[in-house]
Length: 76
Ligand code: FES
Image (cartoon, rainbow, N blue to C red; front, side, top):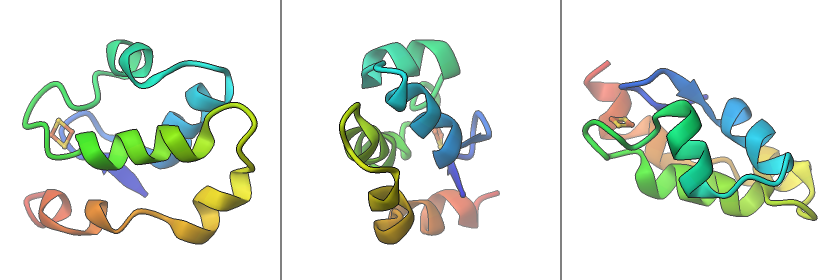
């Protein structure tokens, strides 16, 4: 699922960085998430929190993130 429409970054890509131990600020700098319109920031932070080291990947798959299906995709 695309989290950041502006930069075309998926939840899986964000999760991969979070599982590697990177925090939101580092991931933002690396991928550019939440650096344009900013509508993806809450969702991206949620993905990072769910996927931080020690958190099971299943949590992301089960809970998902409804915000990316909202206004961000509507403008895509
Ligand atoms: S959707 Fe991520 S900066 Fe616009």
